[in-house]
Image (cartoon, rainbow, N blue to C red; front, side, top):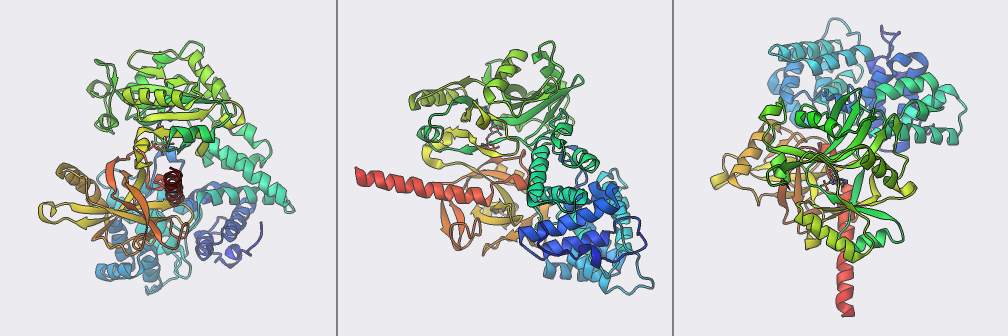
Length: 632
Ligand code: ATP
């Protein structure tokens, strides 16, 4: 594991906090990570640092891990940083004595407020050398800032930020990374999977200095697997400190109350492609309902509903929480169900379009005020009566599901399914699903290990077959709105067009993919303006890869839109997936807005790898078509 020699611990200033991990040590590690793009080196810097923490201050490992991920707690607790530019600029101005104009000017040049704060601290004349920060106090203060609410909260936040900035040791990079953490955008090129690798390596090495390559690989495999079932460092880090890698799987596993990232499917373009991919294997076809994914957890008599993104939606769906127990048979103690929540008309007994679901309020929902009712279509059972079922095959999981839950009219049913074998049978079932207001089919392997539930994976063992694909339009993309163009004529008070981007997981950057300006009604444009205007930022993020696109304004990466395209082409302007197919990026031709994807965060957007895959698939489909023409 030790490829790069880590200077982080040795070179860090030791200050008056010998008994804690200094923030300067963490900032040094971040600097080392940011200065390389080599995955092994990044992992090694972090491993050495975590190992140092484990051997000197194990109680601070959890905080250190969270800070490296720019998080404060597990996702599902919903506590987030993301302090706006305005507030941070104010805090920098007030604590360093610079003028607002100077700070803004520096920001325009540097494109990163962290660097601006760092500069301001360096050039600030002070009487005493600041003593520097430490990891526990930074973590505590960040949590306090994230939880501050009420009318005095802005003043309180500024107060805490200023105090921390004043204490930053200007001979280190503390100020730079403190500001970036506050923004909620650390962006040092550290992917979560690297954090998991380094955590596993550090634990193994701290227990056995002479651990072999195999020991380290085994450690990574175990921690990865456990984290996919139980995505909570709150649980995993103490367990690792306590007993290392050994029997971690027995001590930490899927637990009701802690949402796991859902399994996802690969797109297919035609019924025949399903049979090509699943040839000779046993599979089940299910309706693909068009609603919102709902992971339902039940334990100690309580129901919780989590979104695709692990957000707790129990308050958004109090009606689901109330109606679900009616579907549970006696003898059921606890479970985790994977399902789709769909808008439903009780009078006509019809599934309603997805758009109806978006008409529901998102916050402070009261059961008595709900007009759009939801129906659950359950398609998987992941945990049942104290047992995780991820390593059981789909046939068994579905059997338990149908045996232990009852259909409740207008409220709860199993997803409609069928064991189809031939193209004709699948075709007929697909048509039926569309007639029943579904998006198409999900086709899943159902026997043996390839039919296990693999959390957070876009798996080849689940295929989606949407009716839209069949019309030749291809899969839709979920893209992040990163820029806007001022409208003209009737559109002067709104944005007339937008710049969209896909997400590149490796470089943690947003890559421009197209400008979209058609397909919006006036009303839609006004709605988008209302949502996007507060997200306007003055300078594009350093991690926006714009190419030569020049929008008039930029946005925080937040809004995700589903978009359809006629096809994908290589582009001299945009940067999506550049380097994958050619040096040029890929862009969408005739992009058409479909809907806002509230259930996806910016980092859940279509990735550049997926864009490259779509381009390749399209190319091979074209080749096939040309070949067919020639054969004819
Ligand atoms: P999209 O929903 O746009 O297709 P996605 O990225 O959210 O994309 P996919 O894996 O592509 O997820 O499609 C699966 C989605 O379809 C699930 O997230 C779920 O919300 C929905 N769905 C509806 N019916 C089923 C079903 N029977 N099995 C699995 N997922 C289903």
